[in-house]
Length: 185
View 1 (cartoon, rainbow, N blue to C red):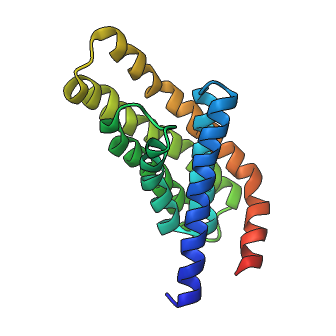
View 2 (view 1 turned 60 degrees about the vertical axis):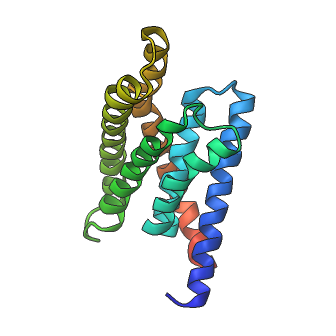
């Protein structure tokens, strides 16, 4: 990678992380932390990151954003959950990268995106459900039944919904984003 491409990658990745944290903070404040709005926005940015800026940018945003969000006070209250959220984000990014960017060019672009939307949402949901609901909450956090149920609810079916909404938004915005990023290169 030459110096200009490296600088472009660093800049894009930093801007995407900043955008993600700003959206989490701003939408969280405007919507009282509504998971469906904030989570959908997060997934949207993750998908846009990997599609417009490449695998390593998307992966970096996926891994770093929960830690950065925690540091500025908009992430999950439990530090122990952050690595698991990063893994769930990474799964979404990996699926979108493999299905949209690494599949044969002769497959229709929208078909690839729809398959990535469904597969990414399902796999992120499954990942977070097993890592957080079935492992982290009962084994690591050892929360009482009431708080455990409330926290578990956030990492179950809503993850499927927010990843799907984020995917739909990304599919709608991608044509414009692709034009913008091609001009920047």
